[in-house]
Every structure is written in structure tokens, then in C-alpha cells.
Length: 226
Image 1 (cartoon, rainbow, N blue to C red):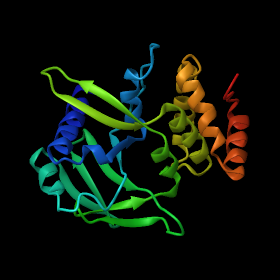
Image 2: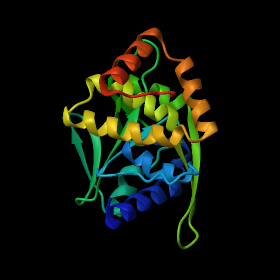
Image 3: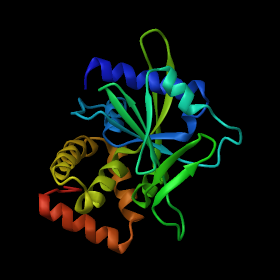
């Protein structure tokens, strides 16, 4: 992560807060790891090497009024585009952001319109579990700007990465994800709270998910609880 990327990230968070939508956004993907440094008492430090930032918009029906998201992001230097019908925003070579939403019931994955924001997100069922185990990181930046940002509990983040590994694309990202999982597990096991959360998340997994978890852990020599 470069200083320019970090600055662009916080400019984006500031824009979300000014639009009053930050409370409905969860940061998932590798940039969640950037915020985990404040959740551990250990010396955890993320190995962040991506410009892709995924924002999980947790309720597509709020707010009731229209939000000028596209205009706001353009004002801080983003270029708006659509790839296969999905809204994306690019800020030079620093960041590329996308909004994701969950899929409920018998709904199908694919393009989901977030009407209040005037954009189209990608609906993914695999991120549903992240919404069930959310936590808040409080950040105070130089200059006194303060934010409360929602991220997945590190325990559920790790498990979700394992569950999605068999279908992860492109192929080279599989090893990268496993490296992140192993690093996070090391720190999770050193913290009673986070270790308990790991057990808690496993208890809500389906038989199919537990089978996938066991298979991936066996493949990569991952020890969840030892």
C-alpha cells in the first residue's frame, strides 16, 4: 500500500460519511485487514498489495432519499464506469472500488440495483455470513477526523476466505488468500475474544460449509484450533 492509496482510501471514507451512508457500509476484502491493526493487541500488520476495495452495502433499501454518490466520488477524483453492467469507480492508479450486496432467500446472484445510490452492485451469496458477524473499528486520523467503520470480525473473515478458496479466481489469488488466512489465524489464536469468535462462527456453518472448511484446511495444512 502506498501513501497515495492510503490517502485516497480515507478521502473515500470521508465522502461516505458526508453522504451519511458510512454506517451502512462494511469494508470487506483485503482492505479490511488494513483496519484490523486496531483490533488486535499483538503486532499484526497487513500485507496489503491491492488497489481493489470492496464495499459491502448492507441494506439496498436505505436511505429512502436519493444519495448523489456518483457525483460525490467524481468530485474527489474518481472516474465512473460500468463493467458487465456493474458500477465501478477508478481513482487514477491508486484505487478501484466496487459495491457488493448480499443475496437472500431464493434470490439469484448477479446484478442488483442500489436505487438510493443510483448504482448497480454485484450480489454475492458468499458474503452473507460476513454481515452476521460485524464489528466496528474507531479511527482517529491526524487532524482529528474521526470515523466508525464496520468490518467483519477477523474470525468470520478468515472462515469466509477459506470457504471461497475452491472457487477463487484468478487461480493465483488462492495462495495469496491462504497466506492472509494463516497470518490472521496466528493473531486470532493469541486473543481469547477472537479465538472464541472463531468457535462461534464455526457453530453456525452448514454441513456443506464445514466439509469445505475441512477440505481446504487439509489441503493447505491449516490448523484452525491447535
